[in-house]
Amino acid sequence: MRSILSFFIWLLLSVSPVYGAVQEENSGQSKIEQQLPQIQDKEDEKLRLIYQVFIYATDLKNAYKTVKLALKRRPNSLYWHYKMAEVASWLGKGQDAIKSMDYIYRHTHNIKIKKKILKSALQLYQYEIAAPLIKEEALKNPTEKNIKDMVYVYNQIGKPEIAAKVLGTTLKEKGRR
Image (cartoon, rainbow, N blue to C red; front, side, top):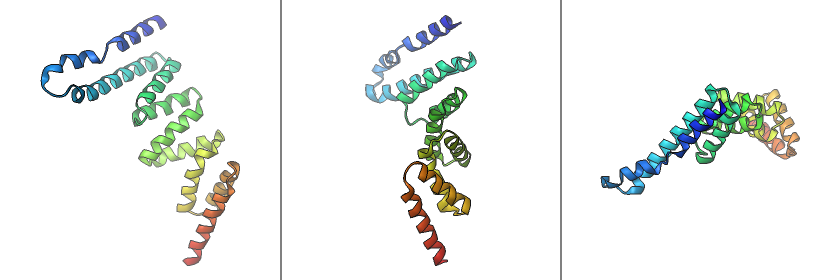
């Protein structure tokens, strides 16, 4: 089974994206204008296909490697960050999953993802990732629980002065009301 998958992947990767660009060379547009988007789309399509093959074959380790490669080539892709969060969590690679979820949250501000990040980050002692999210929550909704959570997390990362500053700002604003 592995040899068939390996051959299939080799076949997909061996077809040069330049081949399609050479055929279109005579169409009148600049070679660079034509090649770049098409090469990127074809490359991404190949990576998605390879990823799907590994997922369907339940070969999560190679699916993970494929996603890492895709993120190396497309570091700003929400699609590949979502797939990284998914596969990394299946493989128990919590730090990679949290990093990708954090990227997705910073670009979408999805509340469900924020909650997943906080839960996972606190369970894995990734306080550096949780701190800005907890601080944001404490500023928006300064309940006793949110303030205690913020103070705890910033103490854990060795920056209690940030929590004190936020707490001071929050108390000043409450005093103005």
